[in-house]
Amino acid sequence: MNSHDRKLMRVLNGEKFAQPPVWMMRQAGRYLPEYKAERAKAPNFLDFCYNPDLATEVTLQPIRRFSFDAAILFSDIFVVPDGLGYPVRFEEGRGPVLEPLSRELIGKLDQDRTMKHLEPVIETVSRLRVELPTETTLLGFCGAPWTVACYSVAGHTTPDQTAARIGSYTDPELLQAFIDHLIEASATYLIAQIDAGADALQVFDTWAGVLDDLGFERWSIAPTKALVAKVKAARPSAKIIGFPKASAARLHRFVDETGVDAVGLDWSVPADVAQSLQKKLPVQGNLDPMRLVAGGTALDEGIDHVLDLFKTGPHIFNLGHGVVPQTNPDHVAHMVKRVQGRI
Image 1 (cartoon, one colour):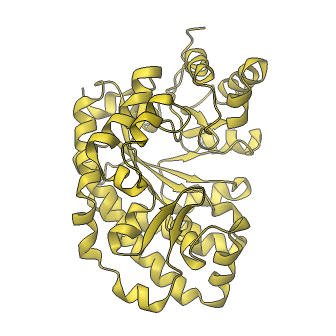
Image 2 (tube, helix red, strand yellow):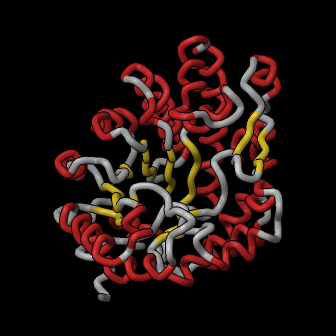
């Protein structure tokens, strides 16, 4: 099958369906018992991401269980700074911890190191394209430079990324130097994913919504625009989904200026904004993940609202952010069947 014949790819090319393609952010994850069993085999999370056997298996698990229309590579946004040589580690109960950003660290980053270090991830992409059902779209991804950089200023996440925002005001040149490295390395990484068999790509800007107006222009729009341009200069047919979370009022600017082919919507995007965006390009989203936790009537009402909201144009059904660990897998199965018109 030609990649552009896959249902999700047809939507990215502007086609609409009564039953849109469906997948979930973080669909390979801790809500699945089979994921937990594989995760236990590699106590270090980055080692888990760099193990093609384990990463391939957990990427395939939700496809086997739910028959999603797309699989997304199991990896992590922090493999890119790790590949550059930026010190990264994961601590239990705390998540990613990076060394605090400094000019000394920036001076040690090595673009030439990146792809050698990320070869196991690219091997996972190649394996997945062989092992996935032919009709299933394979999505690659990376973190947007701002979201990755957020964790570097203080060395860890802070409420509303206050440390990163303060750092962007007090030493914008330092942050820009790191952002520039991330743009270059992320573009190389995404191109390699396309070459290894990814059909399309998603760029996650989870922390775009904490920025003020000037910050959003400099740290979310500008880096994403540069990243998209680099990928498309090398692979003109590449399809890229942008996901700037919590940015409803700025989504038109984001879409108009970055060159993305589709935009992911979180659950807080108002209906009128969502529908106006859909007149410009395909949209993805935007069920509240807590409806998926709740199940029952709340879930059905949410699903039906999203399907009705986007019925007139190209739409990929998804959550407004990632599925959370306390989600009942039976609720996910019900959601997929309802979206696909099977119940």
